Length: 396
Image (cartoon, rainbow, N blue to C red):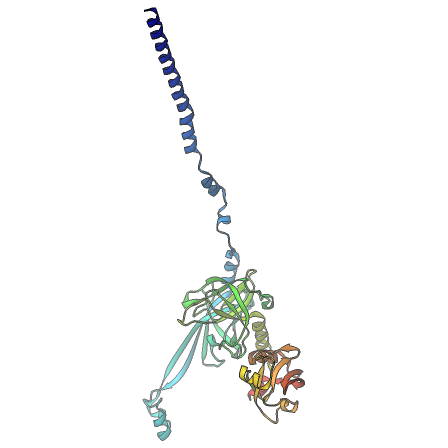
């Protein structure tokens, strides 16, 4: 009996000790577990902590154009050009058959006034009101054309056409104003492909519109916008109405005059073209000083691109150059030794890849100077000294 009682007592003591120990373990679990849960709820996960301590500017990395855009839009204006013409009321005015047999019968039907309007943009380049735009925005320089300039401060001022240059599609307009905000000229020769630029203008009559992009290429030619082509290509959005607007660099300098777009739909497709600022500035200086651009040419010759077939036929090393297809016997070029069939491959030591390159080099040469023309003829290169004459003289 004593052994039974002893065994029972030991079992009861062991059971009681086990209950105490289990209770303490629950307490330990509770004392360590609950604060751990509360601590987890109070502290954000590592990813959340990293996001909350990162500055917003570092997350959205990219160029900040706010300062130069705010300054640039003040120097860009809207230009509205209206041409007033008299149009006959005759029902046969556009009938060439009737006019051939009966002549002009417009007087008996009278005439009416017709107004044609074009809209675009312009860049203020001086505080006293000189504005650069495209020739196709203002049209030819004639007295029947009215130009209205809308400034960024909502003023509308009548403009006067100082001069136009269809060869580069540049025009210069003057308004009577003082103290205007203007965009400073930049050096377009320093442009690099991939450089950030802003296009500012009035596409679809939405004034002071700013778009951003990069320089896609420089020296683009043979795009069909002008005779003298040396365009900057950009993917900054340019649309109808942007013509004549500013292309500015990250320093806020004017490095191009927006001129045209390559598009199959009539809208933006990522290929826009601008006249380089150095070329536009040269045109503007001549228009201000002479009223016309002083441009050189080689009189009496006509050139065409060199085809691979003709290059192979005459044994030329490549298809780079401009072929002389026609010329006048009484021209300075003929007297200097240039002949039809010659392939012009160089001008004053610079290579000539195509007729556009030749035209640019000759146009930039001083009138009255003598240039060295390198031509390929019958398997060898010849250097010929050719006088540079005025382009205005050859047009007369």
